[in-house]
Image 1 (cartoon, rainbow, N blue to C red):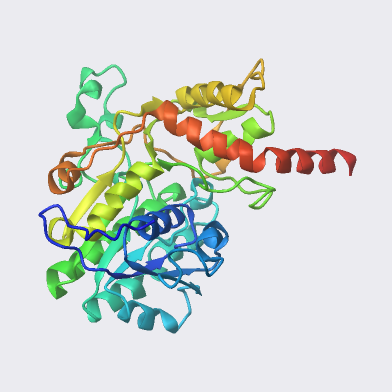
Image 2 (image 1 turned 30 degrees about the vertical axis):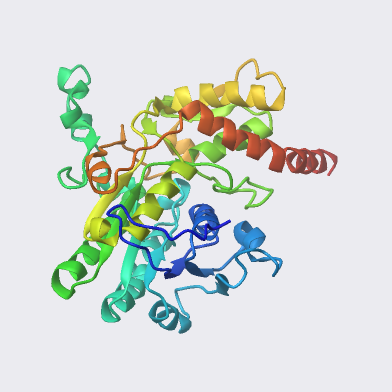
Length: 389
């Protein structure tokens, strides 16, 4: 329940209630951000999306304490004349809309580029032309490959943070060749970042760019055949969750050697609320939002998830819990990857005083507890139907 006590920003100034146009409000991040805003602030939300399954609990019934502070608008921003009017009605626009599933990057490169660049253009244009503040969600993928990945494998410089820690204001964006269409997503996201930045420089657009580093928690992605297409391939944690729920080995692409960091969604949303309510500290900045303390290889992640899920479900792990597959076999032609993604946290800590709190084990426990409670019975039903048909 939102407190009646007046909220103040990091500099002690009162925070006036905002009207927020949230594009992509029905997704994983949007659903958690809506919950946070409605529970803890007096801000109003114009929630835009094609689907609202993940925020239905916030929209019904009318007796909810925040009734009247959230309106859902079923909109596809590709072709809806209402978009500019809703942006004009708002103090702030947050754009979360994207295709952001690695399996799509090289199999649906045109959709990926259109969704992440072309479809975002009107949002940037309307915010700039109407003097509206924009918080644009990008991705840690814009960094591409680390400098260290081009060094010999036995080079001691590979252990030097200067060659792999990713800094918003210093690290280069290094992508693979054009035929590696896996980079279609990163290129589209980088180009829209450059457009947002240019609108700020030339036309005075007030903006903040967010680069998420693997935000994890309940309601992320989908489970194939249950609340997503049977042939769909979600991101790594949901892929592993799906395998655990079905008691199938976890597939390790190219041996699971890539290193990643993971941050709990509730920690990350705290950072976003600080950006919303502290424009003087957030405007004009790009922020890494991740947890460098939660760094593991994908193989180590699989091992941890197997152990956590056994504890959550009470079911013993498989004798052979993982299986190696090639990236070509799993993702198709044109796949490429980055070796490490470790965020530098200097800017967000300096500007907003934010640091993540949740350990990797605890965020996996929370996420897998939710997955087991939500999907275990549905998975059993789907599997029993497939065996009898």
